[in-house]
Length: 169
Image (tube, rainbow, N blue to C red; front, side, top):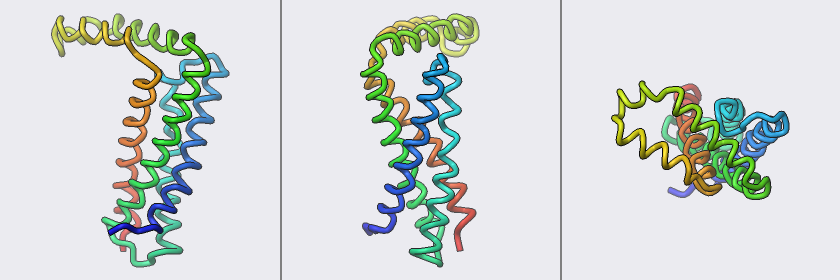
């Protein structure tokens, strides 16, 4: 049930991917862009490469008859450790950078909500839109890091599913 090879590959490729994702976040931050807004999606680019390389490495050195479920577990392990590493580093960045970075993100989110106000009200309703607008005010570094973790994990799991199909026996 517990396979140390899967965990080792997940840690090896996941941590490298998390550091690469954070490096992209830092480049965006130093360019003066909001690394948690629309430009932050560029920091997801290393995830599919790490998942594919992790499964390929596991298949080559640990299990040449890799099945779909084991490939999915390897990919999910890589995605989990990548998301965990990147989100911890994002939390540290937001905490050390001070409230300016968080306030910049909140201002951008408010501007986006105001720009799409009519569509949001049509889809969600006036009350839900107002609650969402008020919730943006209360974003904390831990909430931002948790959101980053969930998004990276979801993206990684999608690519783990694709890679598991690709590398199965």
